[in-house]
Amino acid sequence: MESVRSHLNEYVTTVGKSPIRALFELSFDPTLISFAGGNPASELFDVEGLTKSFTHIMETAGQRALQYASTDGEPEMRQAAALRTTQMGVPTTAAQVLITSGSQQGLGLLSQTLVNPGDVVLVENPSYVSALQAFGLQGAEFKPIDTDEGGVVPEALDAAIRQWKPKAVYMIPTFQNPTGVTMPESRRRAIADIIAAQDTWLIEDDPYSELRYTDEQQIPISADPRLDDRAFLLNTLSKVLSPGLRVGWIRGPEEILERISVAKQANALQTSTVDQLVAAHYLESNDLQAKLDPVRAEYARRRDAMLTGLREVLPPGSALTEPEGGMFVWARLPEGFDASALVYDAIKAGTMFVPGAPFYVADPDPRTLRFSFVSNTPEVTHEGLARLAPVFAGA
Ligand SMILES: Cc1ncc(COP(=O)(O)O)c(C=O)c1O
Image 1 (spheres, helix red, strand yellow):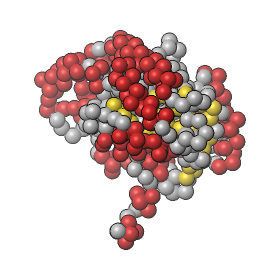
Image 2 (cartoon, rainbow, N blue to C red):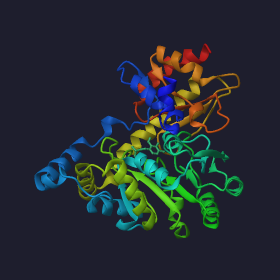
Image 3 (tube, helix red, strand yellow):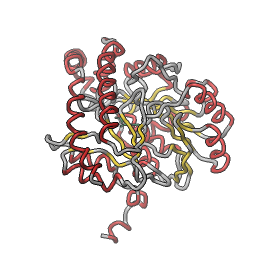
Image 4 (cartoon, rainbow, N blue to C red):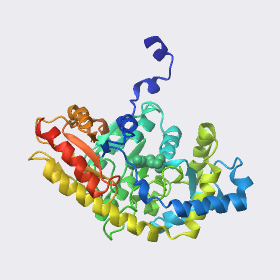
């Protein structure tokens, strides 16, 4: 076995599998109540609206939809992506957008395009595991940036850039995965000042900002025009429409998008033609904001149920984040607890969470764990947490 591994790419053998994907396999057990995955609630998908768009596209543009298409994305979808990004506060033209098969492909392509083995990438600690995989496969070396309840600490970022001279800084400023933390506006300005003054790329990942449960809209850091030549903003329809569609995009400097397009050709030729045409038609013929209103209301209800329930079942002395959007609550158990050691007891009890340690690039905190609150109704969350209570009580 060792000899086979020595014949593989060195990074493929060292980058770990996502523990969330490993748990994902188990979560298909219908009796299990899972708080592990980052799945939007399937029962809230607009199946009817998407069926109409699929039917329309197959009836009016079937041959085109089933054919190969351009690497950069179909014009309708690039236009729709540019419009959505502009509406989020980042003025964008279709030429500044490259369509990807979900934002995960965007992360992989950016990694291939920007990172050489040994390059430093600065990341929040903890951060999104599959971004760490994407950069890790390219041989990136990770350095953590200090964060607090407002996300990345500007002074710490400035010091880290000066110390490590990173190739790129990767951040999820809004409803972060895994912590649910959001960076306030004043801090976004401070971060933009720092990036504008330094020689590094900003990779801003923003899959969750439209799943907000307050009226406060967060504007991406990349909106600052001083960053137009150095910021990449990743977006996706996965969390607001459907992750099965696999439609996302990168907004970035046009001359770099051209290079990313070469990486995409080598990687996958293109994003699904039919998915793009359907998504573009859906966005044009529906008011997604209006469609999202009831989804946001339901997710807020589910978040509240999770927070109330967790306060009851977590051991005294535990801490919780209180996210204003997104999908995740991050918890820290009291001194002496190890969340990884409890996962299998939780599964035996018929429920599941993700231990926090794999999200860290340095100094993993074994007491942390992540709960997704959107996939289950309040009633099911209540039942799942009741199953979990004895697991914590007996630890
Ligand atoms: C922070 C973050 N980025 C990117 C993704 C990838 O999403 P997709 O490829 O479905 O757009 C996810 C999915 O969970 C995520 O949490």
